[in-house]
Image (cartoon, rainbow, N blue to C red; front, top):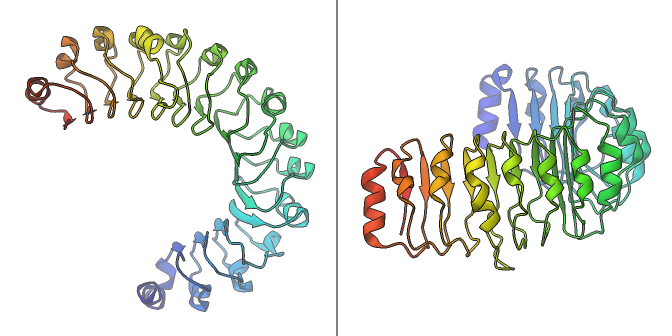
Length: 349
């Protein structure tokens, strides 16, 4: 704390970013920081955002998400340069104030409410929306009016979220490329194929037992995260994802995950760079054809049942990292890996 205040007093105009984690109030010295671009008080016990904060001419980013004690600032429309906002809202009235800020491009919302007003459709410049730890069951229909929206994160916990309604709202948005959904009671159906513009899809931590094969119709996908679920298997067809660079299926151990279909088509993922299958506790072999994945940089198969490796893996000189800890590999196999892949970061027991 003293270090920050010393820096401000010495050269206030040089300070562009301030994070007040651990603070209980916003120090008055910040008023001197006329070039400040970001102020973050997220998840602190700060109760008041002083009036002078709204007068900082270059402040683009203000975060007070997770601040349950903060008195909601009703003067947000007077902030001259605000583009990114993280908020904690207690009621619909506060949400209405947020949704009147038409210049906001990135918005993170936390709070104690379970519906979102349709007035969010006014935020025509919104490009990124995160609904974090909010117990929603459905989205406002006006979200379909946010034609600039390219990134959407929905983390609603154990509420019964309406997946079909979400798809129907978002399916016409051709700029939506990045979707994260964490809703443990949501049912991921074949309608997901309607979200044709997606490039990044994160379904981590949803308790999924299965995924529809139609997911593999999302041919623009470059990143797919299915980690920390209860998957029994990957359906046939994943080899269609020719643009996929990052694939995470880690921590699917509850239902004895069967990797057969994945391993049969792994060689078809010609753009793959990162493969995470750690803590599945079921992978017994790696196919010889993994050698065809010549863009692969990182493989993580920690905590599985590997006893041996394909001969081809020793020729994959392009690998940057290979983690095979907590398996049943023989000592001579480990030594050969270290010898043959001398430029690769090898992690074994």
